[in-house]
Length: 281
Picture 1 (cartoon, one colour):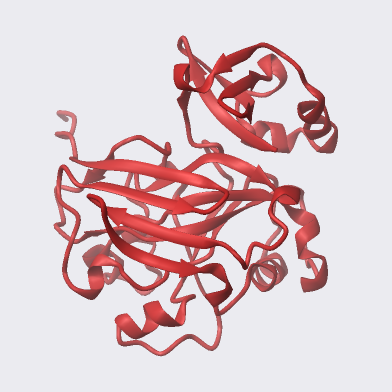
Picture 2: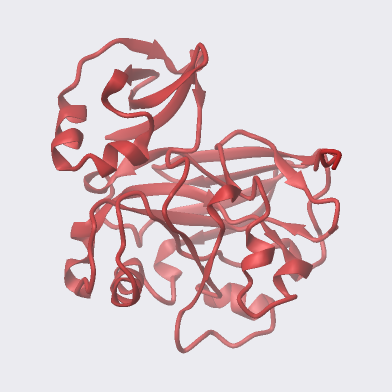
Protein backbone atom coordinates (compact mmCIF):
# COMPACT_ATOMS: atom_id res chain seq x y z
CA UNK A 1 0.00 0.00 0.00
CA UNK A 2 1.18 3.51 -0.79
CA UNK A 3 -0.04 6.22 1.59
CA UNK A 4 0.22 9.85 0.61
CA UNK A 5 -0.53 13.30 1.92
CA UNK A 6 -2.05 15.40 -0.84
CA UNK A 7 -3.68 18.76 -1.43
CA UNK A 8 -6.68 19.19 -3.71
CA UNK A 9 -8.60 22.43 -4.10
CA UNK A 10 -6.88 23.92 -1.07
CA UNK A 11 -7.63 21.02 1.28
CA UNK A 12 -4.89 18.70 2.56
CA UNK A 13 -5.55 15.16 3.73
CA UNK A 14 -4.33 11.56 3.54
CA UNK A 15 -4.96 9.17 0.69
CA UNK A 16 -4.05 5.82 -0.79
CA UNK A 17 -2.25 5.80 -4.15
CA UNK A 18 -3.61 3.13 -6.47
CA UNK A 19 -2.21 3.09 -9.98
CA UNK A 20 -2.63 6.64 -11.31
CA UNK A 21 -5.28 7.68 -8.78
CA UNK A 22 -5.53 8.76 -5.16
CA UNK A 23 -8.28 7.29 -3.01
CA UNK A 24 -9.35 10.12 -0.73
CA UNK A 25 -9.54 9.06 2.94
CA UNK A 26 -11.60 12.15 3.70
CA UNK A 27 -11.84 13.19 7.33
CA UNK A 28 -10.04 10.03 8.49
CA UNK A 29 -6.71 11.87 8.74
CA UNK A 30 -5.20 15.22 7.83
CA UNK A 31 -1.96 13.53 6.74
CA UNK A 32 -0.12 10.21 6.85
CA UNK A 33 1.42 11.06 10.22
CA UNK A 34 -2.01 11.48 11.78
CA UNK A 35 -3.18 8.25 10.16
CA UNK A 36 -0.28 6.34 11.73
CA UNK A 37 -0.94 7.95 15.11
CA UNK A 38 -4.54 6.72 14.93
CA UNK A 39 -3.28 3.15 15.16
CA UNK A 40 -3.63 -0.19 13.39
CA UNK A 41 -7.40 0.05 13.00
CA UNK A 42 -7.07 3.25 10.98
CA UNK A 43 -4.49 1.61 8.71
CA UNK A 44 -6.70 -1.43 8.25
CA UNK A 45 -9.59 0.86 7.29
CA UNK A 46 -7.35 2.64 4.76
CA UNK A 47 -6.58 -0.71 3.14
CA UNK A 48 -10.28 -1.46 2.75
CA UNK A 49 -11.43 1.98 1.71
CA UNK A 50 -13.09 2.54 -1.61
CA UNK A 51 -13.73 6.25 -1.27
CA UNK A 52 -13.72 8.99 -3.89
CA UNK A 53 -10.87 8.78 -6.38
CA UNK A 54 -8.88 11.63 -7.87
CA UNK A 55 -6.41 11.49 -10.75
CA UNK A 56 -2.91 11.63 -9.33
CA UNK A 57 -2.11 14.33 -11.87
CA UNK A 58 -4.81 16.59 -10.35
CA UNK A 59 -3.42 16.66 -6.81
CA UNK A 60 -0.26 18.08 -5.24
CA UNK A 61 1.68 15.49 -3.29
CA UNK A 62 2.96 16.86 0.00
CA UNK A 63 5.55 15.46 2.39
CA UNK A 64 3.85 12.32 3.77
CA UNK A 65 4.86 13.18 7.36
CA UNK A 66 4.40 16.93 7.50
CA UNK A 67 5.69 17.35 11.06
CA UNK A 68 7.43 14.26 12.40
CA UNK A 69 8.04 14.17 16.11
CA UNK A 70 11.66 13.27 15.35
CA UNK A 71 13.66 13.58 12.15
CA UNK A 72 16.86 11.62 12.75
CA UNK A 73 19.79 11.10 10.40
CA UNK A 74 23.00 9.11 10.46
CA UNK A 75 26.42 10.07 9.16
CA UNK A 76 28.94 7.97 7.20
CA UNK A 77 26.73 4.89 6.99
CA UNK A 78 28.14 3.81 3.61
CA UNK A 79 31.83 2.91 3.43
CA UNK A 80 31.99 4.51 -0.02
CA UNK A 81 30.89 7.86 1.42
CA UNK A 82 33.41 7.60 4.26
CA UNK A 83 36.18 6.99 1.72
CA UNK A 84 35.26 9.93 -0.48
CA UNK A 85 35.32 12.25 2.55
CA UNK A 86 38.65 10.77 3.72
CA UNK A 87 37.24 9.51 7.00
CA UNK A 88 37.22 6.14 8.67
CA UNK A 89 33.88 4.28 8.83
CA UNK A 90 32.51 4.80 12.35
CA UNK A 91 32.68 2.02 14.91
CA UNK A 92 29.49 3.39 16.50
CA UNK A 93 26.59 5.05 14.63
CA UNK A 94 26.83 8.83 14.29
CA UNK A 95 23.27 10.09 14.68
CA UNK A 96 22.07 13.69 14.40
CA UNK A 97 18.81 15.64 14.38
CA UNK A 98 17.25 17.49 11.49
CA UNK A 99 14.85 20.06 12.92
CA UNK A 100 11.35 19.21 11.76
CA UNK A 101 10.78 22.64 10.20
CA UNK A 102 13.12 21.46 7.42
CA UNK A 103 10.38 19.14 6.07
CA UNK A 104 9.58 19.73 2.43
CA UNK A 105 7.43 18.10 -0.23
CA UNK A 106 8.69 15.66 -2.85
CA UNK A 107 8.49 18.19 -5.68
CA UNK A 108 8.83 21.52 -3.87
CA UNK A 109 11.81 23.90 -4.25
CA UNK A 110 14.94 23.60 -2.11
CA UNK A 111 16.26 26.96 -0.97
CA UNK A 112 19.89 27.95 -1.47
CA UNK A 113 20.72 29.79 1.78
CA UNK A 114 21.93 33.36 1.62
CA UNK A 115 24.60 32.49 4.22
CA UNK A 116 26.33 29.68 2.31
CA UNK A 117 27.38 28.46 -1.13
CA UNK A 118 28.05 24.90 0.06
CA UNK A 119 24.62 23.37 -0.58
CA UNK A 120 24.73 19.60 -1.05
CA UNK A 121 22.42 16.65 -1.68
CA UNK A 122 22.28 13.23 -0.02
CA UNK A 123 19.93 10.62 -1.48
CA UNK A 124 18.78 8.25 1.26
CA UNK A 125 16.29 5.57 2.24
CA UNK A 126 13.96 6.81 4.97
CA UNK A 127 12.27 4.68 7.62
CA UNK A 128 8.95 5.76 9.15
CA UNK A 129 8.07 4.43 12.60
CA UNK A 130 4.60 2.94 12.88
CA UNK A 131 4.08 2.34 16.58
CA UNK A 132 5.21 3.67 19.93
CA UNK A 133 8.09 1.55 21.16
CA UNK A 134 11.11 1.41 23.45
CA UNK A 135 13.96 -1.10 23.82
CA UNK A 136 13.11 -2.91 20.59
CA UNK A 137 15.17 -6.09 20.06
CA UNK A 138 16.92 -6.05 16.72
CA UNK A 139 15.17 -9.25 15.62
CA UNK A 140 11.76 -7.60 16.16
CA UNK A 141 12.55 -4.17 14.73
CA UNK A 142 10.56 -4.83 11.56
CA UNK A 143 7.39 -4.97 13.69
CA UNK A 144 7.62 -1.26 14.57
CA UNK A 145 8.18 0.06 11.03
CA UNK A 146 5.23 1.58 9.16
CA UNK A 147 7.08 1.85 5.87
CA UNK A 148 9.61 3.55 3.65
CA UNK A 149 10.12 6.89 1.92
CA UNK A 150 12.72 8.46 -0.33
CA UNK A 151 14.67 11.24 1.40
CA UNK A 152 17.08 13.95 0.30
CA UNK A 153 19.12 14.85 3.39
CA UNK A 154 19.99 18.28 2.04
CA UNK A 155 23.07 19.63 3.81
CA UNK A 156 24.80 22.99 4.16
CA UNK A 157 28.35 21.74 4.52
CA UNK A 158 30.15 24.71 6.06
CA UNK A 159 27.41 25.08 8.68
CA UNK A 160 27.49 21.32 9.23
CA UNK A 161 31.17 21.63 10.15
CA UNK A 162 30.63 24.53 12.56
CA UNK A 163 29.55 22.19 15.38
CA UNK A 164 30.19 18.49 16.07
CA UNK A 165 26.47 17.70 16.27
CA UNK A 166 25.96 18.64 12.56
CA UNK A 167 22.41 19.76 13.40
CA UNK A 168 22.77 23.34 12.15
CA UNK A 169 23.92 22.31 8.69
CA UNK A 170 21.17 19.71 8.39
CA UNK A 171 18.20 21.79 9.49
CA UNK A 172 17.72 24.74 7.16
CA UNK A 173 14.14 25.27 6.06
CA UNK A 174 13.14 23.21 2.97
CA UNK A 175 16.11 20.85 3.45
CA UNK A 176 14.13 17.75 4.33
CA UNK A 177 12.17 16.71 1.23
CA UNK A 178 10.74 13.21 1.43
CA UNK A 179 8.07 11.08 -0.18
CA UNK A 180 6.58 10.93 -2.68
CA UNK A 181 4.46 8.63 -0.53
CA UNK A 182 4.95 6.09 2.24
CA UNK A 183 5.29 2.55 0.91
CA UNK A 184 4.07 0.30 3.69
CA UNK A 185 6.22 -2.34 5.33
CA UNK A 186 4.76 -5.44 3.68
CA UNK A 187 5.41 -4.10 0.16
CA UNK A 188 9.20 -4.22 0.64
CA UNK A 189 10.41 -7.73 1.52
CA UNK A 190 13.96 -6.55 2.21
CA UNK A 191 14.87 -2.88 2.71
CA UNK A 192 18.53 -3.87 2.32
CA UNK A 193 18.03 -4.86 -1.32
CA UNK A 194 17.06 -1.57 -2.97
CA UNK A 195 18.79 0.48 -5.66
CA UNK A 196 19.26 4.18 -4.88
CA UNK A 197 20.20 6.76 -7.51
CA UNK A 198 20.64 10.54 -7.43
CA UNK A 199 20.82 12.80 -10.49
CA UNK A 200 21.67 16.50 -10.70
CA UNK A 201 20.46 18.12 -13.91
CA UNK A 202 20.17 14.67 -15.46
CA UNK A 203 23.74 13.63 -14.55
CA UNK A 204 23.95 10.56 -12.35
CA UNK A 205 25.88 11.47 -9.22
CA UNK A 206 25.05 8.62 -6.82
CA UNK A 207 24.22 4.97 -7.40
CA UNK A 208 24.32 2.24 -4.75
CA UNK A 209 22.35 -0.51 -3.10
CA UNK A 210 21.10 -0.45 0.45
CA UNK A 211 22.90 -3.71 1.24
CA UNK A 212 25.97 -1.48 1.55
CA UNK A 213 24.73 0.09 4.80
CA UNK A 214 27.29 -0.22 7.59
CA UNK A 215 24.59 -0.18 10.27
CA UNK A 216 21.41 -1.76 8.95
CA UNK A 217 17.89 -0.52 9.54
CA UNK A 218 17.10 -3.02 12.30
CA UNK A 219 20.27 -2.17 14.24
CA UNK A 220 19.49 1.53 13.97
CA UNK A 221 16.01 1.04 15.41
CA UNK A 222 17.29 -1.14 18.24
CA UNK A 223 19.91 1.44 19.20
CA UNK A 224 17.69 4.51 18.93
CA UNK A 225 14.88 2.87 20.90
CA UNK A 226 17.37 2.12 23.67
CA UNK A 227 17.83 5.85 24.11
CA UNK A 228 14.36 7.26 23.51
CA UNK A 229 10.79 6.28 22.84
CA UNK A 230 10.07 6.08 19.13
CA UNK A 231 6.59 7.21 18.09
CA UNK A 232 4.35 6.86 15.03
CA UNK A 233 5.51 9.19 12.29
CA UNK A 234 9.11 9.52 13.49
CA UNK A 235 11.39 9.65 10.45
CA UNK A 236 14.84 8.05 10.38
CA UNK A 237 17.16 8.41 7.41
CA UNK A 238 19.76 5.73 6.82
CA UNK A 239 22.74 7.54 5.29
CA UNK A 240 24.00 8.36 1.83
CA UNK A 241 26.46 6.62 -0.54
CA UNK A 242 29.39 8.13 -2.42
CA UNK A 243 28.86 10.86 -4.97
CA UNK A 244 27.96 13.93 -2.89
CA UNK A 245 29.02 17.40 -3.91
CA UNK A 246 31.32 17.74 -0.92
CA UNK A 247 33.63 15.13 -2.47
CA UNK A 248 34.55 17.29 -5.45
CA UNK A 249 33.24 20.76 -4.64
CA UNK A 250 30.34 20.64 -7.11
CA UNK A 251 27.86 22.46 -4.92
CA UNK A 252 24.23 22.95 -5.88
CA UNK A 253 23.36 26.24 -7.53
CA UNK A 254 20.09 28.05 -8.12
CA UNK A 255 18.32 26.42 -11.05
CA UNK A 256 19.76 22.95 -10.46
CA UNK A 257 17.30 20.06 -10.31
CA UNK A 258 17.98 17.15 -7.96
CA UNK A 259 16.22 13.85 -8.49
CA UNK A 260 16.51 11.01 -5.96
CA UNK A 261 14.98 7.65 -6.82
CA UNK A 262 14.77 4.35 -4.95
CA UNK A 263 13.56 1.45 -7.05
CA UNK A 264 10.04 0.49 -6.06
CA UNK A 265 9.54 3.48 -3.76
CA UNK A 266 9.26 6.38 -6.20
CA UNK A 267 11.31 9.54 -6.60
CA UNK A 268 11.79 13.11 -5.43
CA UNK A 269 12.53 15.96 -7.82
CA UNK A 270 13.37 19.36 -6.33
CA UNK A 271 14.63 22.52 -8.01
CA UNK A 272 17.11 24.75 -6.18
CA UNK A 273 15.95 28.35 -5.77
CA UNK A 274 17.49 31.34 -3.97
CA UNK A 275 16.31 31.78 -0.40
CA UNK A 276 13.69 34.56 -0.31
CA UNK A 277 14.50 37.87 1.28
CA UNK A 278 13.88 37.87 5.04
CA UNK A 279 10.90 39.73 6.47
CA UNK A 280 11.48 43.28 7.67
CA UNK A 281 11.94 43.68 11.41
